[in-house]
Image 1 (tube, rainbow, N blue to C red):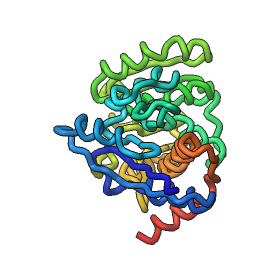
Image 2: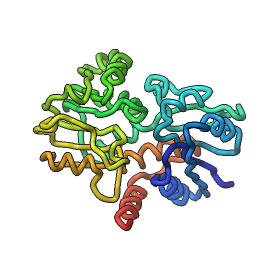
Image 3: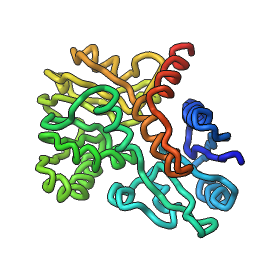
Image 4: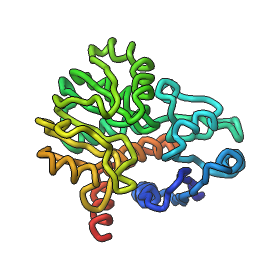
Length: 282
């Protein structure tokens, strides 16, 4: 029986999720149909209500709906509730038409940083850009790695400060200093920068003050592209020696979602390698 899956977002035409999940299915001997559904904001809630009654085995959710998707789910996992963001919808067993909302973004990010890139976030001073659903989803797993400090910067300062309030007790329990600011208030002093904004999708770079990345050693853009993303191009021009995109995060979070839908754990590394080769051919 075909495992029917889909990605919900706007836009979605650029997504490599169909390649990833079909490769997972092929490796595990499971026939997978993975659709990308571009849902415009004006009609998204009605479309989703109809889709949740259809015969899908699972959904991924991408920008700009990760926070909105909390309201589409009938229950939330503890980590999704704490994040206030959902990127995975899973059918609730024995409850037709009822869905569990989860977030696998953070697990995918940490898996890529540690297992694939060979980096250790512990004791690092990390600057995290953005305050939307992607950033919400990665905060808890990042804090669990115990960086020395984690600073959230966003165009709208109040949104970054709200995330600090939401995760401050968790940060304190891990011994992590958690702070926030607007972009304009940023000062240098960061070991790593992680871009959780969607600026690269539009060929743009967040408006950070000159010198923000002085002495920064690692740049990680959650977006991905065949060549260096606009953010990583800019970071490299600022002298950052190691720049990575979010392709490994994408495959890592997809693997966790796939396991929740099917009960089967796919291997990440072969699919990541094949996907990188596919991007290089584009």
